[in-house]
Structure formats: C-alpha cells, structure tokens
Image 1 (cartoon, one colour):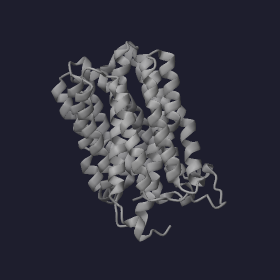
Image 2 (cartoon, rainbow, N blue to C red):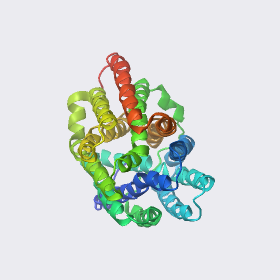
Image 3 (cartoon, one colour):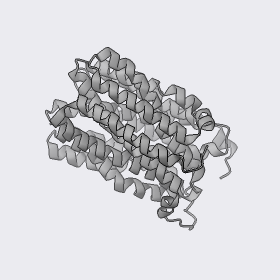
Image 4 (cartoon, rainbow, N blue to C red):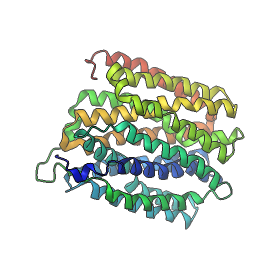
Length: 386
C-alpha cells in the first residue's frame, strides 16, 4: 500500500493511541482480580472468570481477524471493538453475582480481546513503508500502562469498583482518537480469499507458538494471582500499582533495542533468553515473601512478556503473507495468549486452592525449564531466522 503525505503528517497519533489502549488495559487487568477477591470468590472461581475471556477469544479473535482482513479498512473493525468493549464496562455495576459477572465477561471478551492484535496489525503494516519502528510506538503503550497502574492504585484506594468507570472513560477517549489513525485496507477486501489454514503450514511459526504457550501460561498465572499474592504479603493497592509500574517501565530496554537484539541473536535465541529469565523470576516469586524484594524483581518482567510479544508480532508481520497479517496476529493471540490464559488461570487457580500461590510459582519455574530443554533441542534443527 502506498502511503500519502496526509498519512505521514500525523505519525504521533500512534504513540497517543497505544498509550490510551494500554492505560485502559492496566486499570482493568491489574485490579479486576483484586475486585473479584473483594467479593470473596475462591481462587478457582477467580481463575475461571479470568480464563473465561481467553476461552471466548479462542473463537472471537480468529473471527475478527478474518473480518479485518476482508474489510475495506481494518480501522473500522478496530473502532467497533473499542466502543463496544468500553460501553460494556459499565455493566459490571449492575450486579456482583458470580453468574452475572460470568455473562458480562463473556460479552466483553468477544469485543475486547481482538483490540490489541488488530492494533498491532494496523501499526506494523503502516511501519513497512516508513522509517518508523514499532518498538518506540509500543513503548508508549508500556508507559501508559505503567502510569495508569500507579494512578489507578491511588484513585481506587477506597472504591475498587471505580476501575470500571475509569476503563469506560479511557475507552471513550480512545474511540475518538482512533479516527485519526491512518487507514489500512483489508487485503482480501477486493475479492481475493486466502484461507486462515495457510498459517498452520508455516512450521517455524507453529514451533515458536508452541514454545511461547508454555511461558505465556505461567505469565497468565502471574497476571491473575500476583495482585492477590502481593496483597496477602501486606502490600496496599497503591504499592501494587508501583510494583506493576516497575514491571511496565522495565520493558523500555527491549522496546527501544528489540530490533537490534533480534538482529544480533536471532528470534530463537531471543525467545529462549526470555524463557531463562522467566525461570529466575518464578523461582524468586515462589521462595521470597518480602514485598520490597519482590518489587525489585519486577524489573525481570521487561525481559519476559514484551520479548515474547514483540518478537512474535514482528516475525508475523515479516513472514506472513499480507492477506493474512491480521489473522496471523489474532492467531498468535489465540494460541499464545488465549489458550495459555485458560491453562494458567483455571489450572493455576485450582492448584492455588490446594497448595498455595507460592508453590504454584515454583511449579511454573519447573514447567518453563522443561520447555526450554525440549524446544531448545527442536530449535537447533531449524535454520536460524533473524
């Protein structure tokens, strides 16, 4: 696609847009487990509710990916997802019963789960014909997430349900900002149809996804139960916000230098390095109960999640046919984020009720170690892809 001067004139809209969508994510994802815990739900119930969104995403993300690839512009689909998910946030105020929240999360997840992979597909495709890099733009999302983690932690000290109003307002602002994002066409909109099944023929892509599922499963457990675990240690909502702030800011290094790191070491070694850091991180969380040491250990987050997310998004944008780029990003979200969250949230929640959160982090460390050994052997069988 040829980009006009009109498109190039507003490049800073991307950092603004990413900052907003990740600010909204921070409020909801960080404090929803705390909100559910305040309703006295068990670890199993919390795990089910938080994994529910990932289960719905298994079906909704491929659907929205296909719709995006076949639409006149991917942007129209993105705006629909943003306004719908923002409005649904207000539904949480009507009831706190388990089944009502279950139903609300189902509806919310149908729209919300595809916002990020489709945003990445639009942004990465725009970057192809420009001098811009994805890392600094994604960095705006990280900084927005970090900032809102601290602000929200202070705002909702006495009213945890305030997260839903904040998420709604941020979503509404994001919706209007989305109109300024340069339009990216759906490459199957002119009649050419390419089956999403073509993605599964890329053996290297499937192997990478197979490896990252393991780490993402442990990250899903962390995302679900870290807030609860940290508060059980004695941390306040405000301190929890600062812990998440540190984790988010730690992503800056890789977002600025990710292209050089992948270029130097290749995607396989980069992914394996993230797995090794995850082993260290889960071991620390399993063995240490000092809230300040745990806060410092949050810097390791910048060498796990964002490494996986950035590397896979970049790989898909470079290696997947343009007709399937949105579908490729959503498939990655389904397998590596959706499926893993089901495993991490439900399985981890059930284990937490039986053996405790600390012990599950130890098990997570063992699981990633085994995966490193298995996929490290598989990786050497394939030519390195830089």
